[in-house]
Image (cartoon, rainbow, N blue to C red; front, side, top):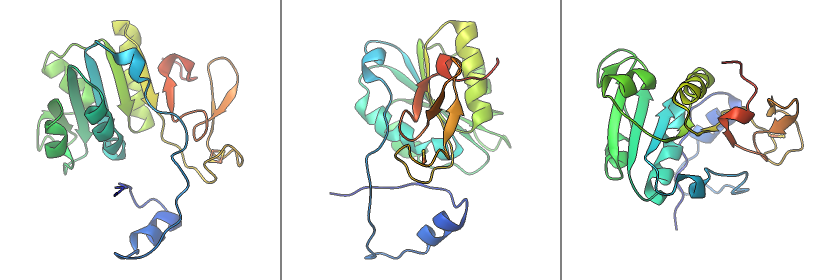
Amino acid sequence: GSLRLVYRIAGAGTREFSALKEGDWLEVLGPLGNGFPMEEMEGKHAFLIGGGIGIPPMLELAKELPGDKKIILGFRDEQYLTEELNAYGDVYVATEDGSAGTKGNVLDAIRENGLRGDVICACGPTPMLRALKEYSIAENIPCYLSLEERMACGVGACLVCACDMADGSRKHVCKDGPVFDSREVNWDV
Ligand code: FES
C-alpha cells in the first residue's frame, strides 16, 4: 500500500516536490515505460550496477531477480540504500573520495574485487553507462542500461527525452525505455 520515490533535486519541479509534507496529495501517472528484461537474466550471474541517483532502481530489481547477483554501487561520497541492498546480494561499493570500498568508480570495484558476471543491468549517469557498454563489449556479455534523461510528459509526446539510436532512429527514453540494450544506444565506444 505504499510507494517510495527517491529523487535528486535538479530543478524547479523537484524542488517543489521536496517541499511536500506528509499528508499532501499528489496525482501519479504510471507505471510508464519498460523495465529490465528478466527473462534474459534467468540462470545467469548478474551484475546490478547503480551510480548516484541510479541506485534506487537496483533495489526493486534485486528483490525480483532470483539467483546469483553482484550489486555494485558507485557513490560520490555518502552512501545510501547499501544496507537494504545487502539483503538481496553481495554488495560492492566504490566511492570517488575513497571514503568506503574501492576508491574510484564501479569498474574499479569490479576489477579490484575480481568480479565476473555474464549479464549487466545498470542505471546511472551517462559516463558510467558508456563505460559499462565498453566493458560489456570487451567482455562479450549482454548489457542493459536504464538511461537518465530529463522528462516532461512521460508518454512520448513532448520529445524532451528523445535519444539517438545506433540504427539512426530516435527513441523516447520515457516510452521506449528507459531500459535499452546497450548495443541499441548510439555511443561510440
Ligand atoms: Fe516527453 Fe519523453 S518525456 S517524450
